[in-house]
Length: 267
Image: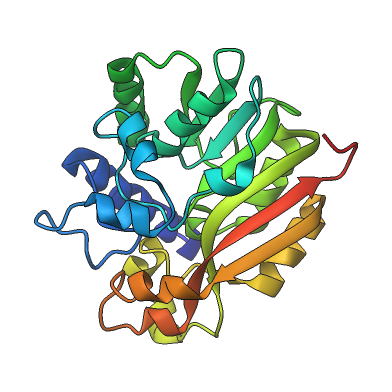
């Protein structure tokens, strides 16, 4: 039986990120710059919002350069909190979160790529980081119990999912009442042309799957979130133009921070 379009997207994304895990890095979320001679440099991570201190605080090999922002900046993590990271990759954001929640806190990273989960676990062992747990699973079907998390993080991953309403529903399920969503991702600021949408590389490169701000707000509200706030970062077009060279991607998508609270008693 031929694969559905959603299955094709998911399979292509899995294969691409497995390759990145094996090669040791990327130079951004997009597909065009991920050549062996163009691996991540620290300036790229600083450009999207991380500090030099952040970069020095994680095990070597954890930062694969796959983000489009810094969700830690809006997460307001507290000591003792439980955090779930959707699409954890090599564990970069998990390790930063682990520092903030401390020994009494707990961080769960979920990734659908076995190679990424293996790499994240290796990085945790390398850094002797004990309050993290990496699990293999799809973000549409999280291997996490109901009402587990105080905060759900994600960094440039939800756009990759062909079933975003299900992702947000799962995020709501695993959050405690009053729990918070803190996401960096891409959003569409103009209709994405069909010539781009039909390319699998543009899906795995964080372009073709971007939803509009209005669509994202609707999906979040339907999933049970309130206090929704989406801030589009206009300056992100500077680095987005390099993600899928020649496509004009910077005309159609921007990075954004996405914040929301699960209905219930506020924390």
